[in-house]
Length: 79
Image (cartoon, one colour):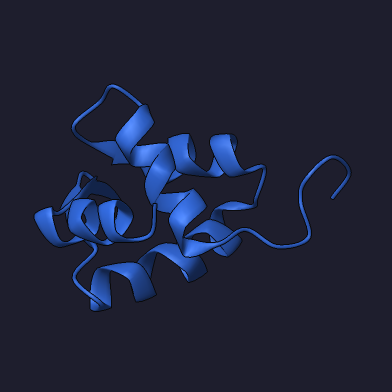
């Protein structure tokens, strides 16, 4: 994909949520911010949710995601 970084860290993904000004983001919104496909974005978000850094629930047919307190602490520790 032209224009997207080869690698994006977990911290960079979590930072998108922190800086978005939104409490909840759709997979599409995160995908657009990353420049990844929806599948590529989901492949990065689900492991972050498994680690407790993001939470998600279905809204309609799609998951919505938000940064957990553990995710905020992870970002604060990585600064």
